[in-house]
Amino acid sequence: MEGREPWRLKVFWMVDDKRADAKAPFWEQKTLEEMSSAEWESLCDGCGRCCLVKLEDEDTGQYYATDIACQLLDKESCRCRDYANRQTVVSDCVRLTPVEARTLGWLPPTCAYRLLAEDKPLAWWHPLVSGRAETVIEAGVSVKGRVHCSETEIAVEDVVDRIRQWPLAWPKKAKKPPTR
Ligand code: SF4
Ligand code: SF4
Image (cartoon, rainbow, N blue to C red):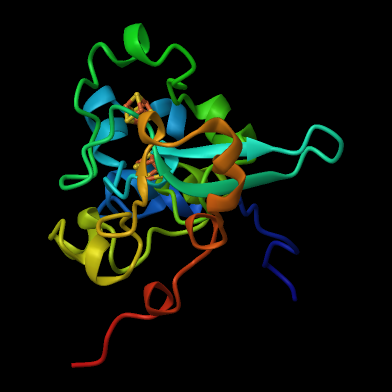
């Protein structure tokens, strides 16, 4: 068409969807590495699943979880009884970092760190989403009431008998919010 430029300059910006929404909560805006330590700690839903004794098949590398608790796990609160000094008592307790969140094969599939590392959303029952710590219990994700005993209360040869599927699985009721 006469008198009109045959083309116009258009500039397209690549916008990361996560960062585009300023109202989105921090776990949707930031990478694991970008979170403050307070934000990082708040991701833990307090389920206690990672504090159950795990076994690894040396031949296959497959992990199995038991319903036996670490000696420092408080079965009522499902929290560590000495979190600040835990590694002086339990030397192999892992300090979770973004790298571990992406690589540890035994992290429960419901774990917030694992979910975010896999670019999945936090579920309805996560306290940061629901606003209530109790929803972790209501969804069947917490170990509360499901721990058989502490690791100090069972013979090593009996540990294998306590292998359970549930610590490494999504409870049915955790998948969808309850209808009211
Ligand atoms: S499994 Fe994950 S969310 Fe649950 S207590 Fe352990 S670190 Fe926290
Ligand atoms: S030392 Fe504390 S945080 Fe570590 S596995 Fe045991 S209860 Fe969990």
